[in-house]
Length: 147
Image (cartoon, rainbow, N blue to C red):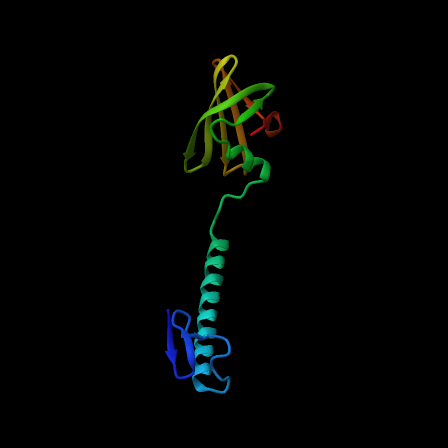
């Protein structure tokens, strides 16, 4: 990890001199300082490139409220149109025209399905709720998430 040089102990892994061990006018110090500076630039360029690539990726963009509905996990508690329910299972769906999530929920009246889809054509959420064999279309504000 450290090695002895003619100018004092030097850290091998970073190739920088330990404070006060090398005269600032020596060529060895200047070489090591430039080498470290170039590595720093290289790291910075790589980091900048990764951030730029991440930013340019085509992602589904939704509002925080829509994201909350799409991120429900098993054991989450919700009320759907006034009916309390617990999410038991979550199934993600990916199609050419829509993407979404199908939640299987337990209510006091039995099993229910909450289907939340992002319609690429409409650019909004399409929500349907099926309880005891009857289905209905809902709006976002009819669903409350508790955790």
